[in-house]
Length: 131
Image 1 (cartoon, one colour):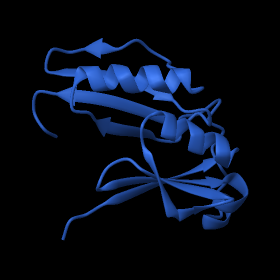
Image 2: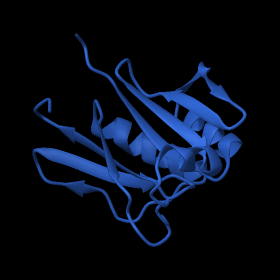
Image 3: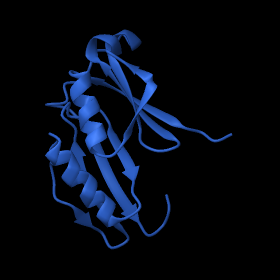
Image 4: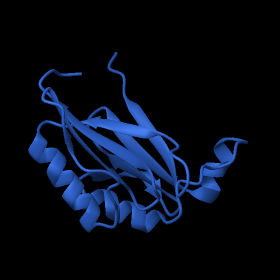
């Protein structure tokens, strides 16, 4: 069995989230999308579900994280090259995301990160070894 993961995050604005992630080059899973949520295909085994905060809040009795103050989770995505990382960060910033630190080169690993418009953190990394 091949395992897959769906990262489910809240969003304040579903159309904005859809536009942001498609600007990064990811595709929409229309079968998992509607007015209050959008499914984004990152790879064959990774999908992202972004639900309106009102919908997301129904999945847990716990409150939502204020991402302007706190890091809720750091989503780490292995990329095929340094160039892919730099390209995704450039696209993220152009589409309304932000960076909070400079790229880092550790020799065996290169990494950079961005925050999407809702403040969800994505750490992009490339290593000479496959994780």
